[in-house]
Image (cartoon, rainbow, N blue to C red; front, side, top):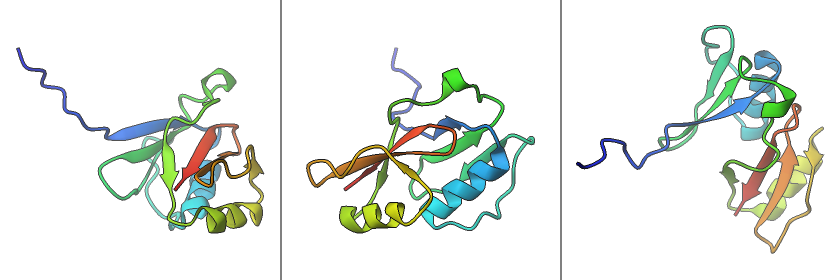
Length: 117
C-alpha cells in the first residue's frame, strides 16, 4: 500500500505564553503586519512564503515545551545585514554568525530560532 501522507510540511508549531505579544514579536522580526486573526483565542498563523506556516500557539505553552534547539530555519540572503538587524532589536542572540552561514536567537519565551543563508 502506498502512503497517503504527503511529503509536505504545512505548519510548525511554536509554544508561546502570550499569543498577542508573540504575534507582535514575530511579525516585527519578519517585517509582517500584525493584523491577522487570532483563532480560538490561542492560535496565530504567520503568513509565510511557500506552503509551510509558523503557527504560534499559547494553548500548548509550558516551559517544558519551549524549543531548546531550532526546529526550522528562517531564510536570509544577507546574513551580515540580518545579524545587524537583530543586534538593533531587543532580541537575545545566542550565537554569532557561524561559518558565514547562520546564527541563533531566542524569542521572548525562550524558543531557539535559526537565521540561515
